[in-house]
Image 1: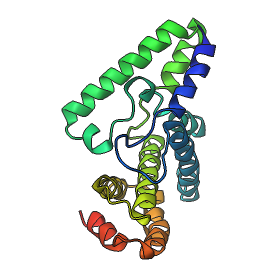
Image 2: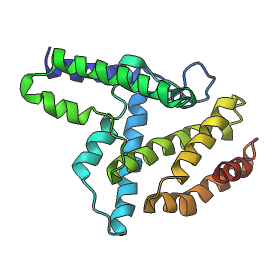
Image 3: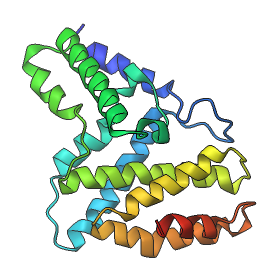
Length: 209
């Protein structure tokens, strides 16, 4: 019982594999994904600050580092499935939040309950920090899918993932998104020249949507 239970539960995130059921040249677990999202987010936030945007860094680190903790209870559900409909997404979010709340009530000492509720909540919202989390999360999907396509993985799931993530990113109005599209994405395309897939065409089709 207590915070020890929470610390022990973090090991479970290492055993939850992303994009389950599909062949992958390289497996990615949820804990590694969360770490990468933090790294993306802090650079994206730096770009925002360079343009005069105020960042709540404490909030940013809390929501990015813990944004997928609820997957301990429901596992990793593929993005196209998760977002198939608003109703389904709402139901999954409700179940995840209810199970996180139950975990907090059962295991976290009273004096820390509100802190854990704040840190383990769904962090994607209309604040700049919530939007940065959304971008960083989708950026990792871009990189995971790109790595598989570059190696010639013929699972169509990764083309869908790559396109979906780019569409989500390009529709978010942030300085860091424009930086990603103008300065980082061209490097991804250039690196993908030797891929068996036409990364440039796939990218352009996604950005035209």
